Amino acid sequence: MKDIKPIKDKLFSKRGDLKLLWLKTNPDQNKILATQKEIRVLKGQIQDRATKYRLSVLKVLTPEQQDKIRTHRWGSRFGAGHEKYGFAKHLNLSNDQLAKMKELRTGYHEETKVLRQDLAMKRLEMRKLFTDPKTDEATLLVKQKELSTLSQQLRDKKAQMKIEWRKILTPEQIAKLDRMPHRPGAMDRGRGMKDYHRQHQNFDS
View (spheres, rainbow, N blue to C red):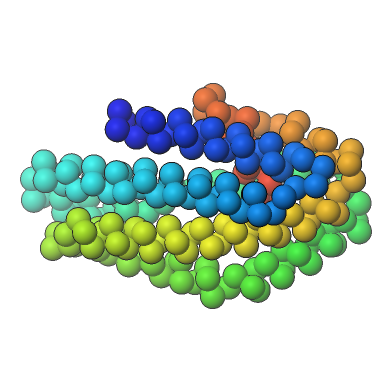
């Protein structure tokens, strides 16, 4: 935790920068994509350190304990938590707006279908490698970078879609984006920003 604190602080700051970029009247797509890339790099650094930490933990465990670890999804991601937060109701979206957003979402899913399949496969490969006692640290880090690259590509596609559906909103609805209700049970530190980005992804899922 001490090792990743400076990275987490930078990540928190970059999320704030991203939030401000989204709130501009005319969001700059290039700046948004560049900031998201910086965020992905920081997340990748944290993931690399997490991988090293987990490997170190495995060395402390007995063979029996290691076997138990391998039966659990320790190498998997935490749930994304894509619950709906009354997004359409909060912004009072019209049927026409909802239809246009649905069309954009459908197009996004079609365009990223292969990419999402590749990402799912890489995550499965990562899990298998992580639970294999013969896998060395270098192999895990290479696989983690492959995951980070695919995740970045998917996030870029999401950003492009969100920029398009933002154009559907009225200025009043855009102003309401920063006042979306917080997710119940979210952590206090940085909760507003985290919720903001989750809420922006409601139409991604």
